Length: 632
Image (cartoon, rainbow, N blue to C red; front, side):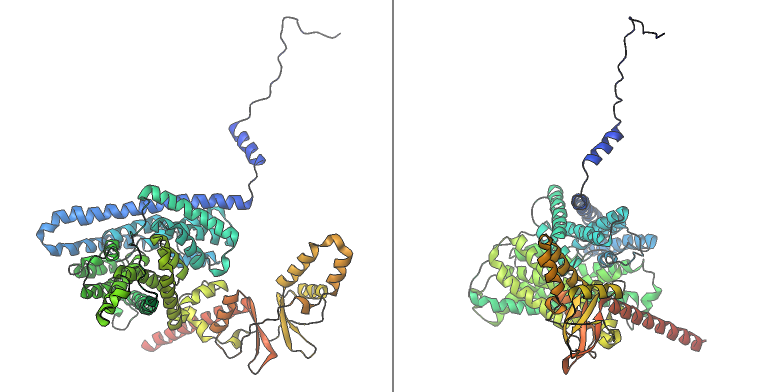
């Protein structure tokens, strides 16, 4: 007997439960599955926004400390006499010294972060906030450095921190680091295009101009520059005068400016290196600095800086005001320009060597502006009446800024784009390119090994120290060559070659003729490209299969070959490999380029350099132990 429900009881219809917020979020994520490229672009926006806010905060901190020290403090002690101006950098050195005593280390610099993106482990913790505060105190109290370096490091640290949190691949880590560096420079100079070129030229290297990489770096730079414009104003770093072309015969004068700029940048970088070595106590006569705690070094630097500032207050701080005055044709005597040039060189080196925190962009631009103005005035003194055929000194100051900066940082494209972006005047491009190009070329001829670290990074050697990078100059090609490379006959079929190289697990092979003479070189990438091209035409399988089976190595191998010689320095072979982005070079006899002596490969180069560095370090250790035994 079936019981029926009472007629007066309403049947309750079951309603589905409302989804919780977490379920709705999961549902949305399942519906919208972002591609890896979309995620990277989102991260670029995040890096640009974070970097922009960090740079704005950094600039406000500099202004705050500058106001507290040079206005509030000086209003109290200034009545005691003009000598009290020296107290400001001394106080700044004291604060930075206390911070160094407390933290010992402000974290890795940009070069270390770039090396980390190449696969080297970061041995020091990231301390972007501590470093930003130390840089604010340094610059606000008058250290002869600039804000662009810390601005770039703010962005690079943000990108590196994000990549470490997300555990991305090494390639993505380098991309996020580059995006942060571009955002930092774009926000610091209000020059987003220059920021992009700086990241691609300096951080990523010339071989990394991939479209996807450019998109990420562009987006980060634009977002950071936009936030910096909102927080700091839309005006550029400098208000530059209109450029005037007086005569086409003026171009050789700018070439002379480029020549002088290369010498200024050489003195600039060498003085900074010597100052750091001096404060480290590694220069004969200055060994006593080894017994002085590093936390005291900024105080010593502050004392020197303060005493010099009593006579030349223009060298205190970032120096943009003085540079702006030179660009606006405010009258500076030739003696004062030359004095500022020399004093700024020395004080920047002492500021950097003693432990103050700041960048080297602004001092380089100060040096370039003062040298350019002095150069124009010297020309007018040497050749009377030439001023009617040449531009005013501010024009030479503008070009000098870019030339010294380009030669110092080894970033010519960044310097050219930056000045063009600041002037927005196309007429300055021709003399600018001439001066910058000559200055960078000359500095490369004078100091060709300065870029050895960037070349080493391309070959997986970023963990070598600066002094160990000189090892590459000492090693010969014969020390790193593979004497028995893989050789394949030119008549061998493509499929047979692919199977043989796969079986032998070799990346490249030398292609030889019947007389065993070198005729070409083949790599797995070449074979893969040929196979992919064949797969794209699989629809007509009969014809294409026959064509593929008939192809030989001679049809696809590289016949235009760069060579290396057994008795040449490894650094010269590295130059040729880096220029073309090659991973291997055949080593042949000098008197017969068809006679094969071996193969120079990327992996073997890395192993050889690391072994040489280890031997050198081991030799120093054994020598020091013997010296200690003899002393006892």
